[in-house]
Length: 90
Image 1 (cartoon, rainbow, N blue to C red):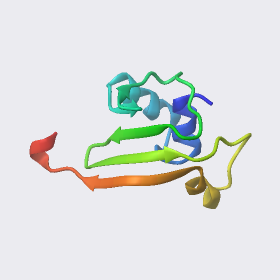
Image 2 (tube, helix red, strand yellow; image 1 turned 180 degrees about the vertical axis):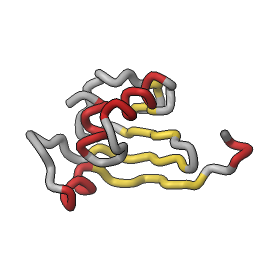
Image 3 (cartoon, helix red, strand yellow; image 1 turned 90 degrees about the vertical axis):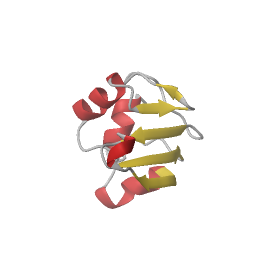
């Protein structure tokens, strides 16, 4: 599954276009490297999101085969780190 689609499906990012923008800005890393929106993700991949107010690192646990009910989206990944960012970090 494409990275931008996974971010949207897992509800880590609200919209696919926003996920694409984050990737294009270098704010999404997979395995510690900047990732393009079309990069394929697989279980075991580590995704880092550098958001405006926090840094989130997740491990991909599962790739869905279709739409995911809202309550099941968090089961697609495991949060490794979720730390707030300070203004001087940005």
